[in-house]
Length: 231
Image: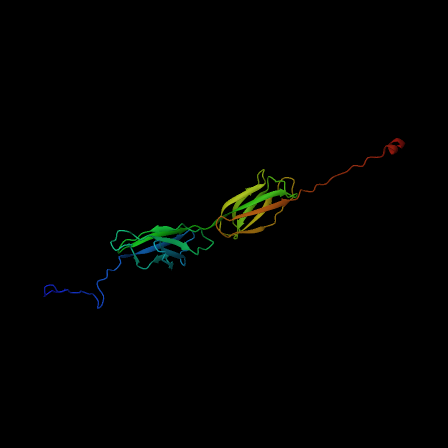
């Protein structure tokens, strides 16, 4: 409240000594919700970047997989006609997970916007080429078994005419493969081999040779013609 008592007098009004009125920025906040295929949600890092000037801040999910950001400006201009855009992205993603796509959001004055991120476990592929001991000729009919680190069979595949098997969508982790049936005419190599899927879209390529089976050969010696004549 103020009162002008003299005509033509200029009155300066301040809300704080030495300062005029300052309009506070209209602000809002952002809630980031994290979920994942295996249920792990705590301790994941997200970066929120204001696209107009590149200002950014990093946050980490709590035990519930959630983040509430600081209050952030909603509008670029004082007339409140242009909204700030913020990019939200997960960073420092562990190799175990696929990195979700970044998202762009705007805020609403006095409210908390929400954005959700879901992490799938990384997956890879095992490819085995079965060949003759010459290292080149592909062998059909070799049967392979793939197991996880707990001994569970996750796949059983048999090589085709090209000598190949392919197992897709193997989850991140430690695994083993072995030949359980050899191609016809070849010795079984039942050695257990270890491999690991350590990042998304990894392809593990293996070539295994087989040795032909060794059979017995019986040779019949012919009697010389001269001895036959004397007989």
